[in-house]
Figure 1: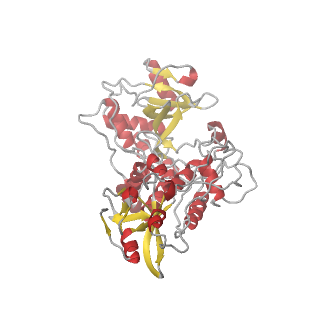
Figure 2: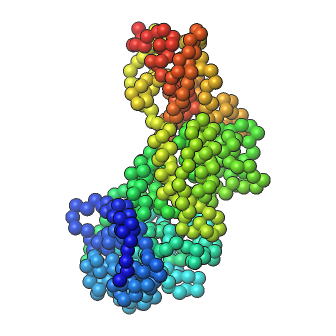
Figure 3: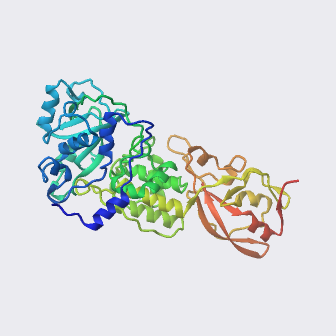
Length: 493
């Protein structure tokens, strides 16, 4: 009998969370099968491909994708007449074909739209059926599947190139995961449709594919809710997939409100003006966040490696005057081929730590305020219950107030026009704000405030204070400024 270590069992208990489904009544038959599959999310095979699914069907060390599907039907109590069981994908296909319940995929000329609980069968270039999974749902012309005996697919390279480069002897053990494929993907052979008595889809809640990252659900949910990282579909996060280099750059720059570049910044040939990540890549290159290279390409769609992610974050933290941090970036399942990459789950946890440690959300100050009789209007903001005002706005009324060696904003003050004559994006300054409010960050919901230790000086006196940078604008605490200027804050006359 297979023995499982206490540590492995403890980790499984601590990191496994039930699938969150909003079910007012008993799930449909199709829904019960899918719930069984989702309940095994992240299960990993033992040595020599040992699984309890194989044990049930007499092949404890056999290829187990089809035995996993059959096991789910067993556990859901689906009659074998409605859902034939099998240990072999090709035989399973023949069984459903014999029942008249097998439909060709779109790449083979089929018109059937797969539904939750269907079986999806895969074939190789020679036409041999070799793998099977369950349909989770179809969204935006993309098929999302639940598969056992699988790894998380890689989509930053063409599927054929990934398949040709794979080296199974270097890969981690297979597990249960959610994968995604274009609905017309050539790898899809067809769909076996069980004769369920009911098949209303599950009303899912949150991300259902976290698997080994279930322990980090709070962090992943927080990062997704903040808009820093989006899921890969309504209910998937794909934590063991990678993240495009351009998307990673855009995300970390948004975290700190960092934008803008100097006139002499040279664009990469594969990220020209108009490209989705042009601004992010130009900003990073201008600020020295990217390593020097003679290559004229950035490869924005290639998944970023852990080494690259750490280097960019370290450079950005140094540029912002913040303490460097070292993060854990584990290799992806297929990181040993083509180019290395780290996982979205690890990136999400790093972003969560940075978001908790440095960037803080700000709120409008909803009352009129004056300092020494000078109306501050709506330029004031609150952070952690403390009122702040932009230094530039305050200096209009109190020019004697200075901040020696002020922290640099994320972008140069003057941005040259682009080649097309349009102004390049830059961090907004206090003078450019409408009613003293930073407008650019307000619209996209991504502004962050970064704390700064400051020295305020006025009339020969100095005072240490804690301010923050927000969308390129330096904010000063009103209470400390008032004490230094010997004035009192209050309501305007």
